[in-house]
Image (cartoon, rainbow, N blue to C red; front, top):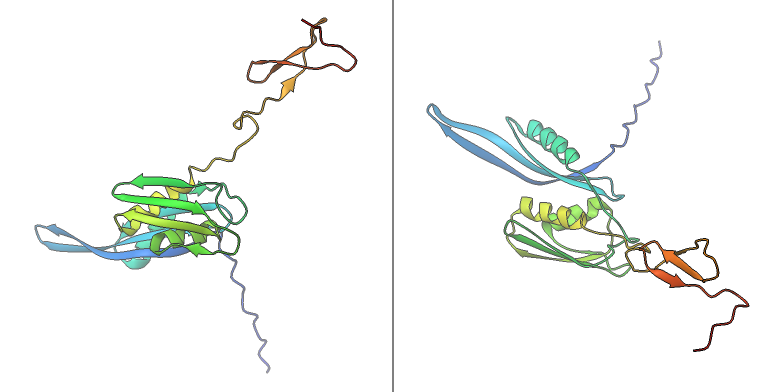
Length: 196
């Protein structure tokens, strides 16, 4: 009898990619002795503008990683990207860690190290220059980077101060009111300005 060959099942690609930043064995001293647990620091992202950092403890490594993944999923932020880089410079401080991020030119790559590089890669940023100032604690550096990425604002017409005029039915006067409430004079074709 010939055995039928089973096709291997394809695993579905996960929604978020993940990178383990730090895995530490932590100890709690109690009356009966020491209790050992594991603490995992994890960065997750979809490489399309969503990224998050999570930290959790568990009785074993896999438990700690799963809990930190769930924590990171709860703390996801959306990043406003400008092509393959960021819209503008930003500086953010969290605890003793300070992060400075600057936009990069196309093809420059990620000029960053450690936790910052992991966050940038999983956020989908390909060209950026960064400098980590102060503490080098991976958790604080990663959280400061995520906080900095959530601060970006894409300018629109109102923020730039451009007044878009709305024409109102006025009698003989040629005036309109902008969205900000300022009066703007509108030149009507064929109408001559009065000489003073």
